[in-house]
Amino acid sequence: MFARVHRNLCTCGSLNNNKPDTGRRRLRRTLSIEKRFLQSLEDSPNTSTRVIVQKLGVSQSVVWLILHEHGEHRYHLQRVQLLQSNDYPHNA
Image (tube, rainbow, N blue to C red; front, side, top):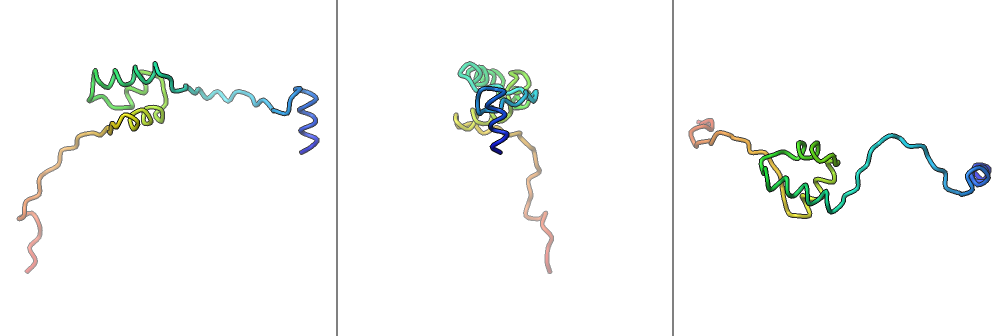
């Protein structure tokens, strides 16, 4: 370990080993992104978060953080049948 630290210090001039770019694109959460996201929610409240993520080019985790901070809980409406009392099996 000490040899590696010494080598980095001699070659780079610092103790920090700069790792190569992995190619993963990260966008930080900014005020403009948050405003654009909230505006798109107001414009089309039925649009899924996945569509908004693709449109804005931000990560899903950023979108969920913004949603939860503003007290929003997105969901998809799912229609189901109403169960009646005669739908249950009759035990004799």
